[in-house]
Length: 388
Ligand SMILES: Nc1ncnc2c1ncn2[C@@H]1O[C@H](COP(=O)(O)OP(=O)(O)OP(=O)(O)O)[C@@H](O)[C@H]1O
Ligand SMILES: [Mg+2]
Image (cartoon, rainbow, N blue to C red; front, side, top):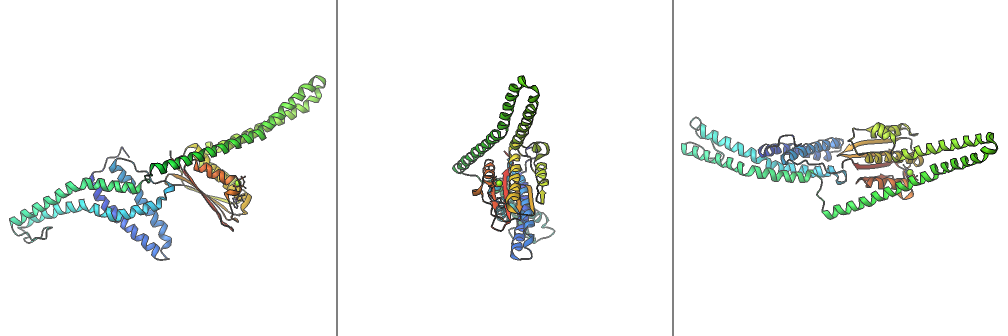
């Protein structure tokens, strides 16, 4: 953004009027869509157009103010915020944008009238006074100067004022420090909780799996040591047993490592890793995937584990015969949505899996929603901000 030329106040404000007209068209379109049942299906398209307009303005206003304007995060309901911007742009934006255009038009009309009155006597200036003499022409020139002066004085501060107002609507909400602090404290608590759960899980896996098997190896090797001096041939099966136990311990260790950070994520990225989960799901499962932003490894791992847990739950509890996994980017957040057509009734109070997801996602300032009425379907949606 910084390497692109800054916009002048005149160009910025004049184009604001054009965007105001586009916003007006979108507003009318939205009203028409909700007014009639037949046009209702067009609503998402018009909304998408409106959101595209807002995204373009974020870029343009950012260029004018020389400060990038990030989109609001998923937690702030960006669609609703864009709609509020649309109202502002249609009304205040349209009016503000008409000032530079009116100023230039006023100068031009009065100057032209003053210049051509001998040819077309009686042409009216913007003051609605017919110009029929040099005196009248002089008045028109003074009026033109007035329009010019008005523009020169009003346009720069007006452009700055409107750009700031617009940036306020287009960007993330400015939270009060207290609200933000409460949020950070809650997130930190969730991060610690998720971390604690993770540590306990790894400790359990190492204790119950790897450690037990290594104890068996040590015991068998001790027996080998004792038997070896008396009857070397009897030692052989024990050595084989120790070798098997060591192989098991190694496999178990690999599994634990895989659960900490699945290698498939490093190899194939989030999309590839999720595609592999979907491909191995025993229930027919489709993946609807759009291009994703790059995200820190921890965020990708969280998104991956969300899909893994949701698929495991659907297989274990739902009785579904169709699952859909959707993976997309919405305003810089990774959105994971897993839907199954099973019996519903998912409840995070009845297990550790869903609660774990909740904590894991909250640690990244993300949100989790589970909609699972009795009789189904179950929709689990998770939004995780991908940026820092
Ligand atoms: N997709 C689903 N369809 C129907 N019921 C579900 C679904 N997902 C979860 N549930 C219900 O919600 C409960 C909680 O799920 P959760 O994942 O937290 O625990 P769990 O799967 O039972 O155990 P684990 O701690 O191993 O994940 C489950 O016991 C199940 O009754
Ligand atoms: Mg579960």
